View 1 (cartoon, rainbow, N blue to C red):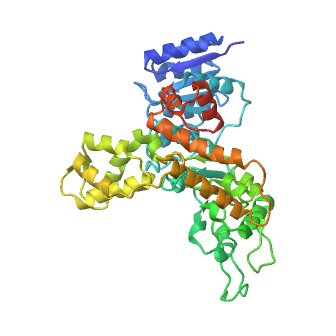
View 2 (view 1 turned 45 degrees about the horizontal axis):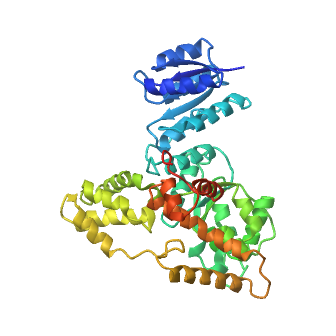
Amino acid sequence: MGATILVADDDRAIRMVLNQALARLGHEVRMTGNAATLWRWVADGEGDLVITDVIMPDENGLDLIPRIKKLRPELRIIVMSAQSTLLTAVKATERGAFEYLPKPFDLRELVSVVERALSAPASQPAADAEEPDEQLPLIGRSPAMQEIYRAIARLMATDLTVMITGESGTGKELVARALHDFGKRHSRPFVAINMAAIPRELIESELFGHERGAFTGATARSMGRFEQAKGGTLFLDEIGDMPAEAQTRLLRVLQEGEYNAVGGRVPIRVDVRIIAATHRDLTQLIRQGLFREDLFYRLNVAPIRLPPLRERSADIPALVRHFTSLAAKEGLPLKSIDEAAMERLRRYRWPGNVRELENMVRRLAALYSQEVIGLDVIEAELAEAPAPAATPAESAGGEGLAAAVERHITDYFTAHRGTPPAAGLYDRVLREIERPLIVATLGATRGNQIKAAHLLGLNRNTLRKKIRELDIPVVRGLK
């Protein structure tokens, strides 16, 4: 039997598209362009599902959600919005929406969400949540960032362990802080520790603390990061650099929910949410025997991959405006970037990602007298930037690619010195080269899969299959 779906959107074209798609599935669709009519239908007990826009002529759709949930807590609500920021996704989720979809949306995805909403078991009504702070920790409205916002919105109210991966400078700690600040542990501590910044012999003491006399120089009891983060969130940055001994102790904590301080005998119970992050390929470290596979699966419960800036170049203007505003608040002159200069910034590869862009914007504000920054200044700045190291897929000649593969093989055998490496090295090396090659080609063709397939010498269907298998993000709307 079809359901009755209430659609509220002031855009007539969107209403018609939804009506056609949902009616084909056998549902009855009632459409309106304002919040007042939607509320009247809900108050009269009509509808099995609500699909609503945020901005409508008479009321904000987000403000309507709590009233609907209070009157009919079982009624599922799907929110759509062209105001596609992290705050919109967070507000929609906190106020009780079943799902949030940014505009423009993928019609197939919306249909899938509708089917899930209609078939999902009834849940308990959520308690009223505090309004999140209006200061956005993440900037950008590209499709890649929308996926990040939706992941944060889904995970923020849980205690699931999260693994954040991405290149250096993509904002991994910002995502970790957003999960904490918008989550149920927001009133408790957020404690961060960078594994790469601490001497290996001190990591266990830093994490778990130590008792007096536990080792030479331990003249008093010291509280570890787990204890400091009690009730809150512990962010383990650069987890791929954690030494083997500490990996074993961390695994025990995750398995048993308790640990002993260095030199201590009394177990300490753990009450923290763990969020880990790395810029390294942990699966490769596992194959090299440098990272525990069982620990990886304990940490990788809810994975979030942050895209490099070159994969979301459409966000660069918004990021530039954000960083120029921050620089002005800190006392630096307010600058703007002209159109030609901004286009050059969008075409640049940004090996240092968002961090590199922020540093450049601050430098422009501090060192240049002109209020409007032109193309000549940007070209001069980029000419001074260090050339990024070529990845195997991006090496211009065969010698560069061959050298990268040779180094990889040498590292592999070095890591397995004394023990025979597992079979299948040929396929593993090909897989590790294949993903960056396809990502780089899609980037060069701005996501056009037809052109990318031609450049790679692949059948278009073969390329699509590899994109799915290798979990490569694609830009919607391009074929």
